[in-house]
Length: 207
Image (tube, rainbow, N blue to C red; front, side, top):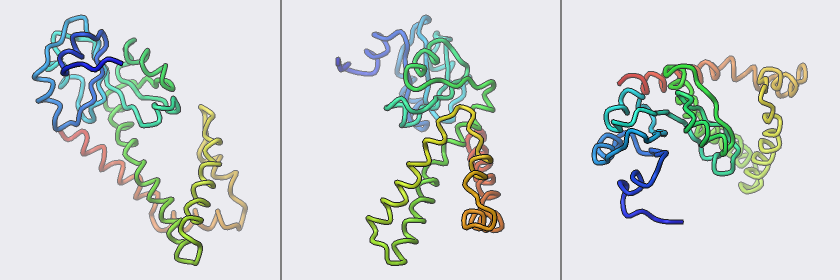
């Protein structure tokens, strides 16, 4: 592996430039770089529309946005791209697959949905903490919850995974799963998820 002396050398020596920057740093960093007209640019900058990228990377016009998650490191995650340029799809098809998004607003919605991962782990942590408070050793509680949900992940491998059907398959009439899901619904949990996603989308698109 060769290490470039600076970002400009990376750009100069590349045909496809993958831009991974914090939104707050993007404009400043990109302003200091010179792109070529034949560059293909694939951005992973959150909340940075194609039109906003066009100026800093000019004269390059082959621009795509993407939302790579950490699972691309093990080729276990599909990556949304907009627009679906050959450079973007060619890159991510080798890293778990690419998912073409039809419009930039739809892309921003997917970006908002990507902000739910921490809440997922908080949910699992809450279950483990509850078990710990009932006398289960912390390590054992965490292992039980982790193993339970890791085992379920195989049910999501189908491209057409039906979440409602999966929920139903784990529900026994009058059983514990049915009661817990019903109690969360009554508490407004699922409405809160929708509201939280709406708030994320508003934050992303308010610029």
